[in-house]
Length: 275
Image 1: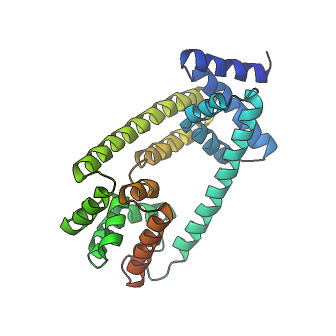
Image 2: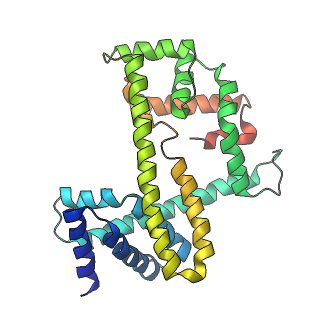
Image 3: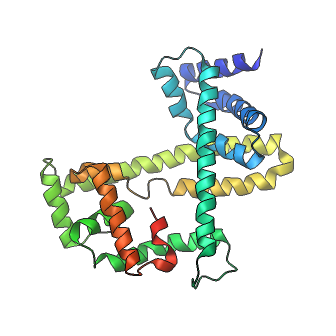
């Protein structure tokens, strides 16, 4: 049985039983060959692509079924290529951010700290920093920033939110109940992805035991990434709640961030990178 047939049979097994194990096994081999042989990616880059495919495995398969494509190997090859292009964009953006962080002058974080440590420090302090600066903003920008970062609202933001919700025949109680349900669904999503990663990393420990320590570190990195899923509310959800366009919400948010930065609030913590 050739490679295409094994992949196709694994997909059929998923649609019949809902079991993804065979598909993930075949997808790993398929993706690694495309990444390393066709695109010349290193092991780290190809591993990042594969982990993202694991994260979106169900979506990948459901798109194939809902759009009634007839050749899964061809479809999956295009899907992997798109993930590779996205990965390269992320790597380019990451390198740019690292240069910004390394070149910052006057920071009291210290030049010997690694970029990773700087990012961790930024994440831990950004909410405290925002909270101190929000009182100086107008009500709408303050509300948008608090909704984005899930910061508790005070009376003035709650009044504005209530007024906005009234336009769509809703209320604060309904809003907070829906937000609670959404956060619960995000926690379930994190658990589902974590379970898939456990299966994937378990297999790589056996097949690539010589690099087990490297895979353990990568597993921890991805576990940390999964923990942040859903922490920030999307601009789309905020726009729907406030009966505004997503473009307007983005503009209000980034204008607020720019205002705080111009007032030198958050400068040393690079608040503009918080979004």
